[in-house]
Amino acid sequence: MISLSTGAFYERSATQIGSLRSRAESLQKQIGTGERLERSSDDPVAAARLRMLDREERITAVDTRNADQAENNMRFTDEALGQIATMISRARELALHAANATTSDEQRASIATELDGLRESLLGLANGRNASGHSLFGGQAVGNAYDIDPVTGAATYAGTPTLDLVEIGEGQTIQPGMTGQDVFAFTDAGGASTDLFAQLASLSTALRGGGAGAADAARDALTTLDTGFDKVTTAQTVLGSRMAWLEIMSERRVDNVERITEERSVMGGADPAVTMTRLQEMMTVLEASQASFVRLANLNLFSMLR
Image 1 (tube, one colour):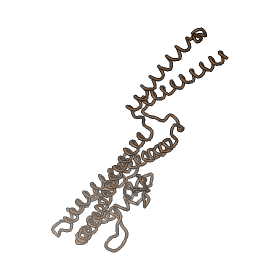
Image 2 (spheres, rainbow, N blue to C red):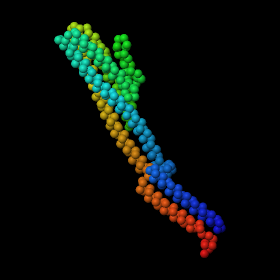
Image 3 (cartoon, one colour):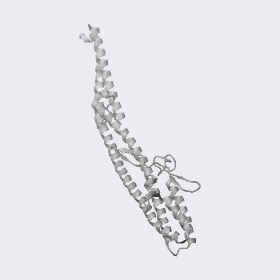
Image 4 (cartoon, rainbow, N blue to C red):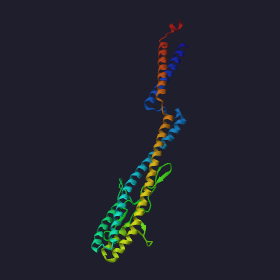
């Protein structure tokens, strides 16, 4: 009977001390990691919510990458649009000079040469790339936005008419740039579809022809260039509004990340002060239990009979 009781005493004491040590180790781990949950069973409701927060965080990370890429593309596009607008303004100045009756045919031919240079530069911008090497104005096309005929120099749009939208959070999407048709294509005074490159080439050819026809072509080109300039400035305005919206959504994502961090801390975080206090209490109980076990274990049968 005594041996059974002694065996039960040792077993209960070992189990109790082992449990206290395990709980102390758990508290020490919580202090080290800052997390109070080691397994879902510790708090099933909190664990489920933490999994949802992890999912939200992963989605937010994807939205942030999408937004960063969109912002990068739009900044490159905005810079290109600014340069395009400057070039169109210069082309208009040249056309205005060519329309002047006092301008000689030789001067108009010189103007045509500068217009050719502007057109070439505009095509270079139209086929520009962003930091990742994707066409700025080609939509979803892999190559250049415009194909240029090596013989005639004619430019043909080779991109797609649309650009895929990207997710930037909260179910919101944004078009991360402009297509060539958004910027360079328009309808001329006669109602025909054309683009800036064709109009500049036509004006250059007319100016080289000289005579009254050259002056008339230059005057007609003023309206065309105004239309082209308006198309570009409209694109700048649209792009600016998208960039502003992107900034608003970026601020929302930052707020959302802060909310997730705070809620994760509340749901699964270990309060350092509280956890330290609990650990100190646990260590006190553990030390007392170990001391009691040692004292009781040293008692022999005779001391128990006294």
